[in-house]
Image (cartoon, rainbow, N blue to C red; front, side):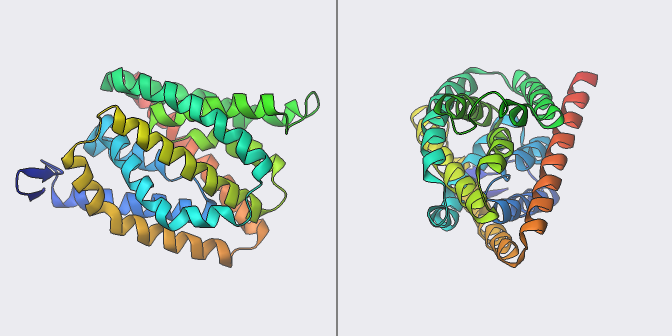
Length: 265
């Protein structure tokens, strides 16, 4: 628990829990630095246990916004702009809907929704739904890109993370190299987060306590994203895709366990 005047950050949170929150943010943003996405969902899933779902989601929204000062410039280097523009517009519509749902949902329902999102991500990954579509339609079709982006924006906003997990399988198919894939991920994650932050701010969901908490966690965020960026530059394309697959698998397992625990409880 840390306070400045009447503002108290992490009220009721002990030293061990604080160390856990910092470690989780470092690890999450290490993943984002390496892949261009992937920090929010594991952070939300783990910090929910000590902060509760709403606080965990809002905190990672703020820390992700801070991380863009370091990461977003990297998203302009090799981004596939033809596909990124289509996805960005679709994500904005999904984010607007997601903020509306998030602002009025109860914590218990939010946890249940997180569990329901497991099914969608697992099914998409298990049955390679997007890959099957390429035999019927153009993967670079504006309609397909817009639909996927809208789903991504809504899911990521409501759950606090995981939106780009819906898109990364698609982006792997349309981005020619690891550099283009990572840069496109970075740009989309940054655009997604900055627009989402704007809507959450207008919805009045950020408090002075949350802002102070984000500043406390910021060093772990910057250090993690810096270390992850170094890992990417030191990796071969094969290693990059192997890491990407492991992260997707770990995320799917984590979501599945989260849903099972909720249903069992």
